[in-house]
Image 1 (cartoon, helix red, strand yellow):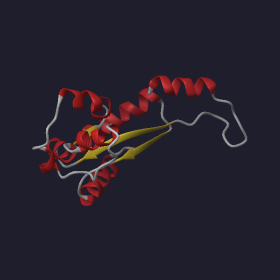
Image 2 (spheres, rainbow, N blue to C red; image 1 turned 90 degrees about the vertical axis):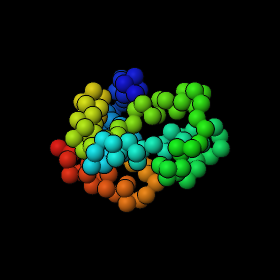
Image 3 (cartoon, rainbow, N blue to C red; image 1 turned 135 degrees about the vertical axis):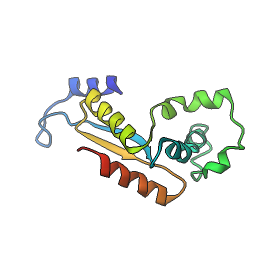
Image 4 (cartoon, helix red, strand yellow; image 1 turned 30 degrees about the vertical axis):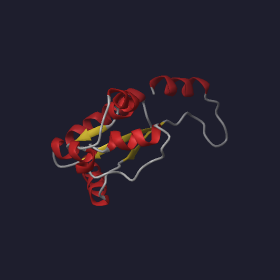
Length: 136
């Protein structure tokens, strides 16, 4: 991501629509009241990413209990590691600290947050907790 941001800024050409580079960085985020609760909500994420990357197409996002019994191989882990390793999962204070770091390291003008959970209510709670704790 850092290389992409640097390349964009280096190649940027001002126009009538935009005088300066404007960087939007996306982040996959799951926030819950505790780190443990957030980790549980994020448990299906690797399975969902695997479904996309194997060409099967995106499956409906599974319930956390569903993925506990599914087979998982080292090859599966390798296939999704880049997405799982860059997901921000935890309690509000932890995630906001991580997102601040992401913003500062990339110099992002805007963060685009995506939250995927099985239950839409958990997704809404994640956004609400993040908004409540985000310093701006």
